Length: 170
Image 1 (cartoon, one colour):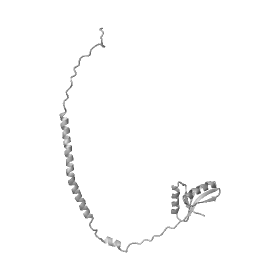
Image 2 (cartoon, rainbow, N blue to C red):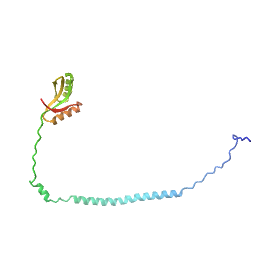
Image 3 (tube, rainbow, N blue to C red):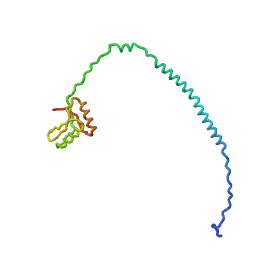
Image 4 (spheres, helix red, strand yellow):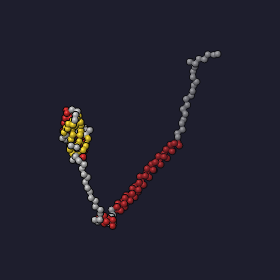
């Protein structure tokens, strides 16, 4: 078997012929037709939109004229104006009683005094009630529950939470 010298072997001479590409005339023609069609479409929209706007403005003006006509008086309106209306008696609800708000219950008087001082900084007066071994911080009495809720919201804004509103039993 004969030995082949692959290292010193010369490569065959390939002629480098540049392939001449044909210009895509069809694509250029298609792109120019699409461009022309798009331009014509834009021109059509701008010329015909003014006509539509004018017709819409005329319709709106006609509608406004129709709306501005005087209403026709009817028998129904006369019947309402008459004094034949039903009169209803309104009675106020009775208040259920005075309310008290309790904001805390502590084992030591010092803790209760601390909460009472925080409440005092909001401008609301509170008192401490000693009941058994508990010191309860209370506010009130309030005539209506609405006034108690108002003070409760003031305390919430000052981050004093946990207040409950109850009927006041002396």
